[in-house]
Amino acid sequence: MRSTVDELLTRLIDAGRTAVRTGLVIASGGNLSVRLPDDTIAVTARGTWLDRLEMDSFSILDPDGNVVDGNPTPSSEWKLHQRTYRVRPDVGSVIHLHPRTAVLLDAMGEQIRLMTLDHAHWVRSIGRVPYHPNGSDELADTSAEQSRTHNCVIQAHHGCSCIGGDIAMALRRAMSLEQAAVLTYQALVLGDRHTSFPRAALAGLGHA
Ligand SMILES: [Zn+2]
Image (cartoon, rainbow, N blue to C red; front, side, top):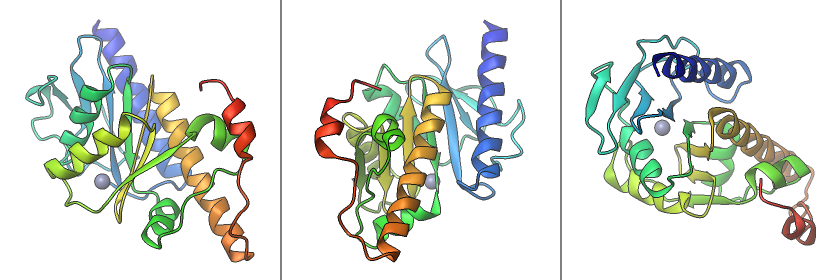
């Protein structure tokens, strides 16, 4: 059990490094979590830099959000993670990041378009919630509600949550979402407002 927990936390530390290295976020722009085998949740502690996570950078919460082990001060966004796991028992990881292009396009009222097979397969659909203050019940509850039907949810003027059965899938979705936003941005710069992955082909894809 301990070795499984250590392995999961090591993968989350890796995911944080990847998110910063690939330009998805800077510094402490987000928070990460994984569901542990005993149904507790490991979530990054408050103020942690995503490329400098260590084994003591995580708070362990029970399913109701009480800190039961690890770092005593979880991220101010812990409710966002806890509420999402509550509505999606199939989900093993929540990656909440502040990626600039996805947030910019949404703030401008532009829909992020799925352009490639990767976007269609991994992202599939994008939910969104209006702006709510950081750490609020409103942000956590509205995002969790959107997570019932979308694996990627944009939080206006703030960030996104991407979820998956495991850490790799959640991270892959976050990377694909931001790439879709970048391609949408580039299409807009070229004057294109309509190109997107064919709707008929999207309907024909199996479950990711
Ligand atoms: Zn955030």
